[in-house]
Length: 477
Image (tube, rainbow, N blue to C red):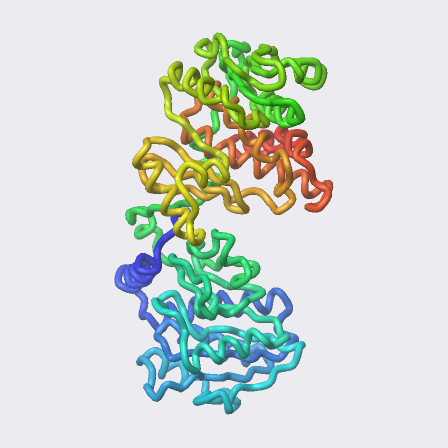
C-alpha cells in the first residue's frame, strides 16, 4: 500500500473524477455512504449525533453523511463554522439537500454559539480536511479546543481537524478523536507516534478511487503488507540441507547482559538459518551452550568481546545485542567492517540518534533517516508501533504488524537475530528487513493473543516465530 501526500490524495480524487468518470459531488456521496455504513454497522446509530462542519469543498461529504444518518432515523444536529463565505458549489448543494430533511442546523459565528453536548452524544468532526496547511487560529482554534473538552465520543472524518497529513502538527490545536474514518489508504500522519493522541483508532474505508492512479503514481513511503511478503518470502526446497540456508554470526553479550545474546541467538535459529556461530565473552559461554545448544560458540574475551576471529567465513553478521560500551569495540567494529562486502542495516533508535543527532519531531526523524540512508548507502530500521525501514533508494517502508506488548526489553535483540538469520539465508538486505520486521511483529501478535500486552516478554516473541512463518507460508500457498 502506497502512502500518498496530501497533494497526491487531491490528485487521486481528481483522477477518479476525470477518468471514471464521476462528478465530485457523487464521489462525496460515495465517501459519506461508506462512513454511514460503518457507523450503522457498529451500532452508533442509537446515539445523538452532533456534526461539525467547515465550508471547504471536501466537507460536503460530512453534510451528505448527516442526511444519510437522518434517513436511518438517527437523531442529528448540525453545526456549521461560519466565516461569511457561502462555501463551494458542492457544499451548497449538499447543504440544500440537508435542508429538505432537517431544520436542526446551526451556524457558529462566535464562541457564544458553541453548544453543550451530553456525554452519550457522538461528535462527528468534519471541520477541516487534508488540505489544511497552517495552524488553526481564531474561532477555528477555539472551537477545536471546545470540542476537545467535551466528554462525547469524537469521530473524525478523513483526518482529525487541525492535523497535517504529512508534516508535524506538534503544538498545533488538533481534534483528539477516539476514532478516525479515513479513506482508501493510510496517511503518513497516522504512522508516527507523536500523533497518537489525535487520531485514535483508524479505520480505512474504500471509496472506489481508481487503482490505475495508485499503480502509476510513485510514492516515497509504503506499507509492508501481504504483497511485499509474498515477493520476499522464499519457500524451502524439499532437497535442502543446512548448508543451503547459510552461516550466520552474532557478536553479542557482556557481563550482566548475556540474556541479550541468548535472545538474539534463539531468534536467529528460529529464522531458519542453517548454522549459527555466536561470538561471546567467556562469562556467557556456559549460559549460551545451555540455553541455545543448536548454536556454536566462539569465546572472544573474558567479560566482553574483544575480537571476532574467522568472521569472514560467515554469510551475515549481526552485532550489538548486549555487547556494552568498551574501548576495544572500536577495533572490533573495524575488524568486522574490513571483512564486510555487503550493505549494512542499522536497527537501534538509540544508535541512530548517537550517530546522526536528535530530531525535533517524528517527521524530522523520518526525513533524517531517509537522508542518511541515501548518503551512506545503508538501510536504517527504527522500531516502533509502525517500525520503518529507510532505504538507499529513498523509499521508506512501514511495517503493518506488531503491538504495544512488544515494547519490552529484549524485543530489539530478537529482531536483530531474525534479520541476521534471513540475511545469511541469501535474502537481500531489503528483503531481510521487510520479512524480518513483518515476522517479528506477526510473532508478537500471536504472543499478545495468548499473554496480553502487559505480560508479554521478548521470549514470547521467539516462541511464536514459528506461528508467524506458518501464517506466511499458508498465505503464499
